[in-house]
Length: 384
Ligand SMILES: NC(=O)c1ccc[n+]([C@@H]2O[C@H](COP(=O)([O-])OP(=O)(O)OC[C@H]3O[C@@H](n4cnc5c(N)ncnc54)[C@H](O)[C@@H]3O)[C@@H](O)[C@H]2O)c1
Image (tube, rainbow, N blue to C red; front, side):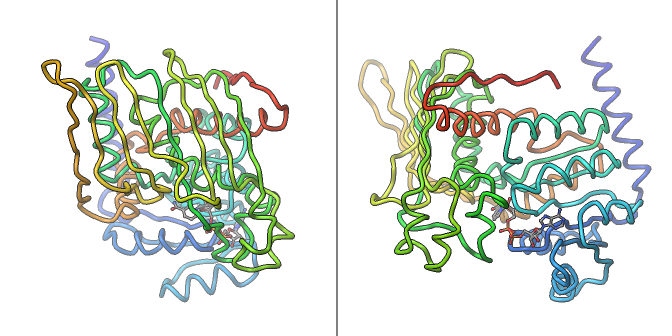
């Protein structure tokens, strides 16, 4: 009975939403017109049911140049708030600002009834993540977080393997990855300065590794974390593509942590933007009936570094089963945009929900707090 009323409610919302939008195009805005905004506009331009009507950037002239460069005819603004205030009919925005400016425009948009596709990481601190979730609850609008690897078939396969039960009960996970020399400065210093990025390798690629394994095992709640972070490479001009950026570098370029999760599971994590090593290790998911090895990558696009292997016993014989990489039908960025638009159109659920990603953010927040304190810390997530 309870289930059928939830289903009825869902059907009613969907029908009402579809009636409200009808055959018109969805009106979308882009807040922050830097590097990743290019992927958003490219994907929106491929969607027949979308018009990108507004663009905002804090840097004078940047939003207008971006709009013209992409052959669009819209309105331009100097901030996310200004865009939301002046576009009462907008359905959704992509928040493509640097990490420190993720929470504020997202909360503002949600509170003004606008759905949000928010780039990853969700934000910088757990407090900000809580505020985003509260704004979501208050508004009933959708924030979805920009984890495009979720749409890759290999990432889905990892989840399917865990859910199939072939690994038994999961008790230990090792994950992470990184690059030998790969500190990102694609358009200046927004990834490497505390005032814009807030977090370094952890927020850039660490959040993907965490999402890969946490999503596979159903996002159990994190309980404690003992974390470490360092910045030996970013602060050294010899590892920087632009030597003078080393002086500005003040986030992490390496982080490691031991995280306890609900369900008596431990997660051993490390992530690196630069190191004197090829890889800090494969991802492994160990279970009572079998274990899975996933050759590591920095995983931004969901790719894996080669075939995966399941180690298990078959009729008492130690067996290794190879799972070859799977082709994804479509580009993960397009799939991320499309899934968000479909949720907006139908009043459906966020494809990458904050209810999960708040745990990802809580771990990142815990690693920073623990590294600062020099000992293990508890993760305490307030009531939303
Ligand atoms: N999903 C992915 O694969 C992927 C790839 C790269 C970057 N990202 C994420 O995207 C975000 C942006 O990265 P980027 O490389 O495009 O950065 P960027 O520095 O190139 O662009 C960010 C832009 O946002 C603008 N901005 C900041 N606050 C604003 C505000 N309140 N209103 C309007 N404009 C504002 C800045 O002026 C800047 O032009 C980061 O959080 C990053 O982690 C995701």
